[in-house]
Length: 172
Image (cartoon, rainbow, N blue to C red):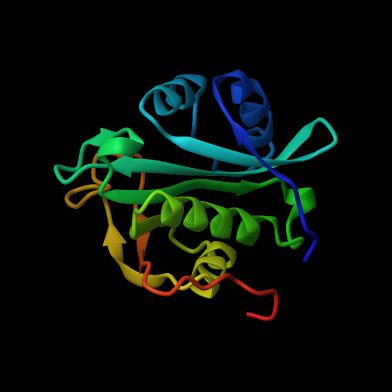
């Protein structure tokens, strides 16, 4: 696993994020989506190779009424937008971003975390399982805490309740 420097991203980085997503099959976000997510409290981190953004991972927060909210009111964190440029896959960047986001939530006293994964995305599912997530079900946006986010296509939901934090290891 190549150890990477993880940096927090913000609105100023939307163009870099969109450049990364242009290289990923099935990426569905728009400038408007990212602008909205940053304004509603979504936290996003990235990994760069020089000036080029090569991997990202986000956390969106939801309150007890399934409304997207800021960190102060959050009851559940949802890991989203885990994307790695195709030329940088296999270096462990996604696992590092998953663990970074879990640790961030732990430091914020948020112990319930969900992850949304596109059906059939076996590398992402394995990375989440190695970090202690378990399969929770199949979600088409009809109910549950993530219903308002899942509106474009079906997702698998994986869940982790932090009790004893476990970092992913390359041997997993």
